[in-house]
Length: 308
Image 1 (spheres, helix red, strand yellow):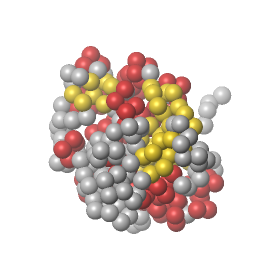
Image 2 (spheres, rainbow, N blue to C red):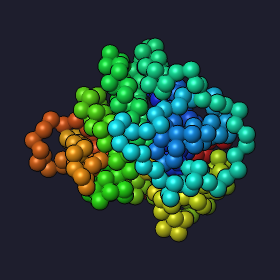
Image 3 (cartoon, one colour):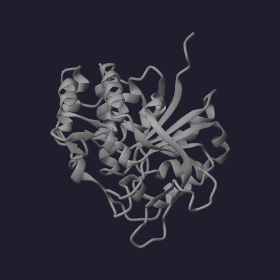
C-alpha cells in the first residue's frame, strides 16, 4: 500500500544551504512540495526569487513559485551575503531559468490557496525569516486547523551567529518569529547548534561531487559557502528541517517552551529555549537538541542520490 505524500509549502531565502534543503524536499518520494515562497533573508528577495527559479529549472521540477516579503514586519533588513556570496548562490553557472515566479498574488495568498484547498493537512517549512508564515497565521487563522505542523530551522541553544544570543533566521524578523511561536500550531525546531553537528565531512563532499549533476552543482556551490569549510566539514543548517520531517528518529527532541525576545536592545531575536522550565510557561515546540551526525550524513547522501 502506497503512503500518501505529505503536502509541503517551503518558505526560503536561497542561499546555498537552502538550495540543498530544496533539493532534498523536491526529490523526496514522501513529500509533495506544492509551493515555494522565496523571501528576503540571506540576500535580497530579487536574488532569492531568481535563485529559486534557477534551482527548480535545474531540478526540472515544475513547482509553483510566489515571491514573499521584501523586508521584516517592522525592522530594518539584515542579510548574509558574506556567507552565501553576493547573489546567494555564487560558484555555479546555472542554465537559463525557464520557470518564473507568479506575480499575480502574494506568497501569503498563495499559502492560503494551497492549505485551504488541500484535502489533507499541509506542513509549512520555514528555512528563512518567518515573516510570511507569521502573516499567513495572522491573515488566515481559519486555515490553521489544516496545518499539520510548522517545521523551522532557526534559533540557538546558547550563543548566536548574528548577535551575541541570536541566530540569523530568527534575528531577521523577531516579531514574526514570536507570532509563529505564539500561534498554537504544532512547531518543530532545528536550532543552529544542531546544524553544526550535522556536518558534511570532506570525504562525503567528494562522494557528493560524483553522485550526479545535482551533486556536482552543490560541490561547486560549497566551494563558495562560508558555513564551515571543505577541510573542517560543511554545516547543513537548513537541510535539518527536511530531515526532521523525513528522518525524525535520528534526532533527540525535547518538548519545551520557546520564547522570542523582541524588546532587548542587544538581544532582539534571541530564542529562549527553556530546557529547565525556568519560565513556567506551557510548552509550545518540539526542539531538536542533538542529531546523530553519522546517520545524518548517510541519509543526506542517499537523499541526494535521488536528485538526478
